[in-house]
Length: 193
Image 1 (tube, rainbow, N blue to C red):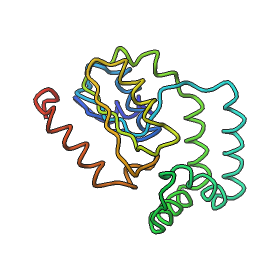
Image 2 (cartoon, one colour):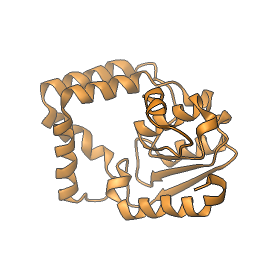
Image 3 (cartoon, rainbow, N blue to C red):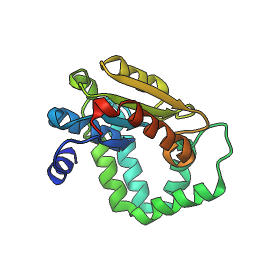
């Protein structure tokens, strides 16, 4: 994915990635550090594939082929801010997104997750400014993981958005946009934007 995006986009970049997209953005920085002006990573992680992870992931793929609606009903609630009643319209929109993507897209995404490297092996080599965003209620990629990434970088900032889980960009869109634009404005000279 990272190599494809680098081929399709010329010149200097400031990749913005959410979840798996954050992993792709970090891999872009690993593959083409000279092209990175900055990185914005939201609700992402750094670890490689866990020892017992594959069977669970493969079961999710099978579940998607059996019943995408049931998969969405199981998968979405823990992705949203825990302890906060989610907006029913948002849950409907996210469910529609999952159903429209379908089992083939779901399977490709899960397989990509199963092939992810341990980003901690190359994160210290990233030299561009990095904004790490996460939701205060993100149980999948919590603040701790973002701080672990930041500790390996020279130019990193972690911002935590309250009332948001793993789907922070759609749970708290105004706050997410404000954090990104504020960071870009704060670093515009260094980022050359």
